[in-house]
Image (tube, rainbow, N blue to C red; front, side):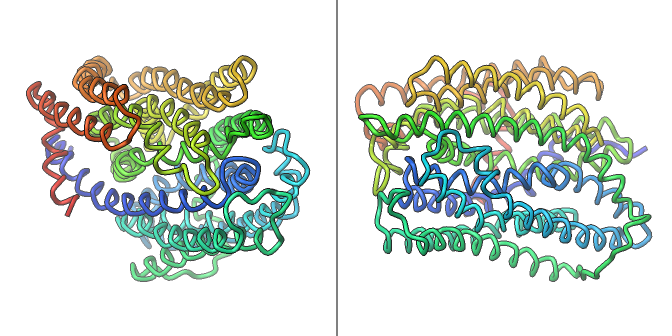
Length: 539
């Protein structure tokens, strides 16, 4: 029996793999942030903005529903097992996978384009006629992304199992740059504040085809990188004996998981679009629909994507390998390492983001097609989402641990519970809150569902792997929130004195410095490991 690696070596290895992805993800998210600002300035948060964001959400939702869960949760552990067990290192399986996925994605994309009016109607609660027509036309362009997003997912998985973590996080940078250029061109041609009634067919085509071109550039980067890793694709129409059936069977419950998450998004989109249409047509005419939620959610994803996704992506192949070899102690050690690192990193960032959310949103969004009131609504949604950042990240870690164990059934059951809680709370918010605040209530319901799901998931996972140190992790979490109090106190005090962002950020920075000193004095070892990687990360 192999001896377990030391926790320090595990943590350093994870941080090394994670830092490569984190650097790429940081650049990707930074350019993605600029992309979001450019698109927001071009289409706003009112009727045209909701039309664009609804149409652009549908291809990603369909991809997640039909193939995304299989790609992200099942594919990497499956490929790891095939590479370890097949005589050819899993090459034939990989070639068959790429063939089957490519054909399936083409068929799905074609059907989706034909069904664009029905799909838009599923998400577009109370769209006015011109807004609905523009959203359908955009969707006919944007649904072609299903093929490209799916192909990107397969190529990324093939690169990840080869320990090529960089390209999948750096390739979206080119995608973002293309869309930034498209947004700038749209602003130059159409100007800010275009309404669905006045936008031309050429301007719609610019938005639609330009967005698709960005995803095409991303796929090209991944394909070239995979070729450089000496992978050669060959058309294989002989799936028998490839083990793909194993992945599909595992994906049945994953399909259930994704169905639940997409049902949650349908609820969010409908309630947000309904309240947004009322808010945009009222006397104040403020944006409080799906665009408001989308822009806030993209800001909320920054710390999770840079730190959380990077560590989780590095963890999944490792934990899958431990599970396949029956090394449950090492799997549990990796889980605990990941949980501690994520909590130490995420708690202070979540507090700082919640405090600075509203002035941050006003500074970065209040221009061109977005008014100060529109931007303020984005900030309040971001505040609520930031409060739930830690349970959201913890839930994702637990779900990936189940996937490493080859268990897709439990995450599906957990997701069903999440969407039930979310549906109840979001519906209550829609019924009780004024239209311009409904989207804030919907976001609160979403985050509370993850808080409940994390508690349930942790209890079940502890039974499965012989304990996850729940009391120790809970005690660490409590100490971290206590140590983050200076961030909250200083940040809120500065908010009372000024509405400007810079003083708030300065106060939060002082609070973060105090957090580091406090947790080091309390002997939280993970902060030393994180700080030891910072100089290289910043370089």
